[in-house]
Amino acid sequence: MTREQSLELMRSVLGEIAPEVSLDDVGPGERLQEALDLDSIDFLNFVVGLHERAGIEIPETDYPQLSTVDGCISYLAKRDG
Amino acid sequence: MGDFKMPSLGADMDAGVLVRWLRHPGDKVQKGDSIAVVETDKSTIEVEVFEAGVVEALLVPEGERVPVGTVLATIRPAGVAGAAGAAAAAAAAGVAAVAGVAVAAEHREPEQPPIEVHGVPAISPLISPLVRHHAAQHEVDLDTIQGSGRGGTVTRADVEQAAGRAASRAASRAAGAPRASPLARRLARENGIELATLRGTGPGGAIVEGDVRRAAAGVEAAGAGAKSAGTGEPSEPAVRVGAPPPAAAGPPRAGEDRQQAMRRAIGALMARSKREIPHYYLSTTIDMSRAMAWLEQANRDRPVASRLVTAALFVKATGLAVAKVPEVNGHLVDGRFQVSPAVHVGVAVSLRQGGVIAPAIHDVGVLAMDELMAKLRDLVGRTRTGVLRSSEMSDPTITVTNLGELGVDSLFGVIYPPQVAIVGFGRVADRPWAEGGMLGIRPCVTATLSADHRVSDGHRGALFLSAIDRLLQRPETL
Image (cartoon, rainbow over all chains, first blue to last red; front, side):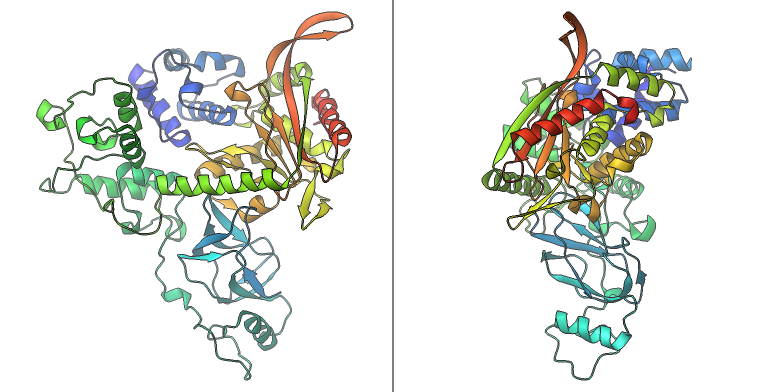
């Protein structure tokens, strides 16, 4: 998955969870959960969204890799090829 | 009896808007069926009927705001003969029944004519807060959209289509007023920023919250002082689509007016709680090592969509602990405390743009963890973006509030009257822990109880918290 594809995927999943904030407002190293004000259910919905739309398995132990925008992009590139 | 009244969907509610009728005269209804959609200051709620019967007359037109207690409709209870039922119900309401139902000859003149529902245009079709948000973002006037969803509901796709149509309209429209989301406008106003100086990064070049925040922070807005077309940036024609002129009076729309109304409603409820309820507060730190280990193992075996969160454990433990100290579970009304035989745990859900609602998960004690988790996710989702049911608003017998993700160590909640207790959980964090003369590190959470001193006192409250603690030490039993 390219960087652009990953960002698009993230925007689309987050659009349902946090519609009033834009992913573009989040710095690459900023903590996603804080920047977007996601609670544990929001974050779970985010993971479920990525899992369903990208068709990848995301074990709980991998959650820390999804804590920043860049982290998500690397993770998605790795898992999806 | 036969009257269906505007219910109180929260102690703070004094009026609601009857948005849409879901049933018509002649429809049979079962207990728990939704009969109407009501909008309060805080949320959109599907109102359920209390008893089975047949809908006789709908007395309030869609779009009307009425006080709590107003008779909205008459329902003939199952098993009651037509004419007698209609006469009794109509007599109570003071209004004649809708044509088609036999009316007893001795009826008095109606105070107002009954409303023929089928001919009344829906003034405010059912629109979820999420769709409202999209409409606000795209500056689409919801009243002009034909809903394509079930029952005429306006869907997100409808909004996007309308926005698309608007954007392709002739550019001869005055390009004076810049397109901006309502939130962006408010922020700009508050910070003294001219919208015309900003370059919008939202849909169609609209100015969004982020644009204003950056400007407020002193970051130079690209193309400041010039319209975006002048800098060669691609731009949509600045078309205002059906948005009401700022000075127009009218019912509050989605966006900040609803926010203000919600803030007022919450403020009134919290002020009343603090004024009337003598709160006492207890806190305890709970060793979560067993619970977190159990959770990790449980989630390893579960597909992503079924994973459990710690909040679910907290809700379940609270629901079960009530058995030990029933006087934290119930309602205090008119000076009398009524312990509740059922345990419906209210879950405080924060709304993304401010505000808190605490709808109930019913019968928590008998739910398996997976069921509870599914209900929790569904409830949080619907609280933020959809529609809640009246039973979820009126039934909580105790509430749980959890702000762990924000890094707060402990949280002392404010009791939602007529409830008598609220349990708070902070974040789960590693702490030093002494046991058996040894010092180690364990994940811990601080659990608190705020309770009504008219109904329980510290000793009983402490027993309740320690019951929650014991339950969290045996997570496999939850």
